[in-house]
Image (cartoon, rainbow, N blue to C red):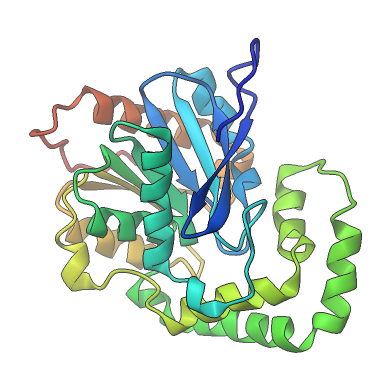
Length: 290
């Protein structure tokens, strides 16, 4: 259940949790009101990757929910690859909406969270007012994913004697810098469940196929950036061609929203305002906001 406290600043997170299929999932809750944005983090990261953008959007009048999906952050981390898949992460977003009794929020995320938002859009049409899809990993990412995930999986499988004590030490290091902590969070987790997460994702599908993506009807803001083989800009462009109500934003780099976020913050706020101003039967226009 969500905790609450009198006098909590709108930009401070209130921690909560709920149960999904017998497992505890944790989330942070910023701000208040009926205009809600739900965010899911990237692979082997956690909701703290949104420690800047969540309070920023809350200060602009939105309630922002950041979830630790199963196997990540403060949520349960069972060491069983069968529990982890992109469709399951999409189901967890739906379960969070039901738990908090949210009325068609905007759903989004980064990388893994972006793909989970697409799974949500496929499985639960009309349950969101819009989708925020930053750095999707789709058809053109096959080579980049193989190059990135193969050594990672080998390291998690065979490096546990080193990684396990290292993670215990790093968990004691205070959080000081958003970018540094996003990197350290990869190593702060017990490597066993992390390996299971990666194996489960690779064993199942990593995203909805083209035949399902073209059926997504929710408005979508798709953010891509250049020079990243794991999140190729061509995947972002392809998704915009597939989803009728999508528009494309070209970020300068993967770091723009982390280091100089003003432009993308404003674009996101414009998209959120449009989603909440648009009637369910109407559709936003397609042109790029870049």
